[in-house]
Amino acid sequence: MRLTTDGIVIRESSNIGEADRFVTLLTRDFGVIRAAARGVRQVKNRNAAATQLLCYAQLVLYKNRDTYIIDTARPERMFFELREDIETLALAQYFCELSAVLAPQEEPAQEYLRLLLNALHLLGEKTYGLRQIKAVFELRMLALAGYCPALQSCAVCGAEPPQPVLLPRQGVLCCAACRPEPGARALTPAVLAALRHIVSAPAARCFAFRLPEPQTALLAAVCEEYLMERLGRTFKTLEFFHSL
Image 1: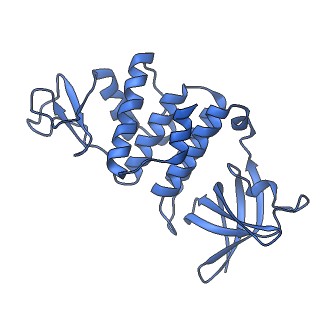
Image 2 (image 1 turned 90 degrees about the vertical axis):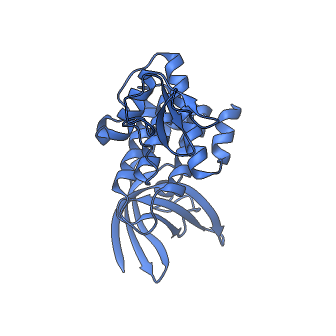
Image 3 (image 1 turned 180 degrees about the vertical axis):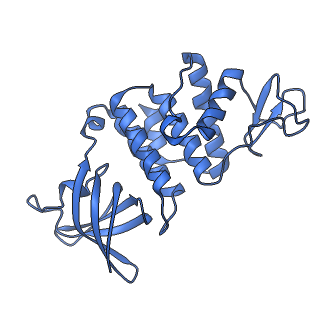
């Protein structure tokens, strides 16, 4: 079966024989798939460039039962600029690893792909700080995957919290006076507004806000803590990013 789509390489997997390689792709129409890229370890192979990590390409695939094979891959964006800085590259690799976990498999994933491409573009453009891009990507990806926190009002009294607190384990908002659970994270009104913007803004605008540096640091901590609580795991690429 011949299939066409577009997607980005989010993992270079095991080598096959002397010239082939498996890659993991996040595609618009089929979500996360693992595909064989034949001959791409040869320098003159026509698909070699487009099947490298972080390459976004137009793809023609063949599917034989459960196996995808890349027939042609025409590169659209290589994101070379992300390789110029080790911290930026580490964050891009973390975004790819998180996408592999949260994006659907064998199902359309247009919004997941769009979010990843936008995040990588902003990393390269340096429009926003790394911590802000990371926080938005984590929370928006969680929201797409069905882990969106309830941020409308206090889960106990139903009011707009004057001193908002996020309960990561339950994924709800609470007033500081409504007996939050141990480990609850106190928020500022500005950070709460940013969280609400991230999960509700149109895809093209979810990164578009400004916070003072201390508020950005709090936002980054809140989003990462919530991600760890929801998924119950960490990521090697995230640990490497924090080690830099």
